[in-house]
Image (tube, rainbow, N blue to C red; front, side, top):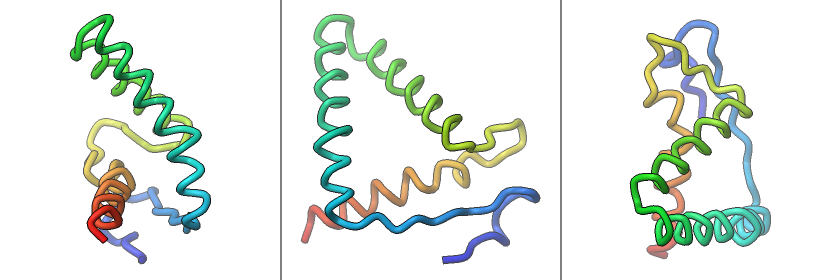
Length: 95
């Protein structure tokens, strides 16, 4: 899938295929502990601070990945891997 024509100048899309076993490992090793942590944080401090923490963590992850969030950048483009992953996971769950 090559959508480089829809990206801002100087930005490229990199696609990495993740095998099912690696995806399952990531869900078990990363996603479940994060969900548990966020649920515990919500119980202790309320949902707004848990949401803020989640957004902060997402921002840190995007920065680590090298996402460009400069002014004038369309966040829908920068966050498209997030949306694609979400939609793919939803599709997998319905099968």
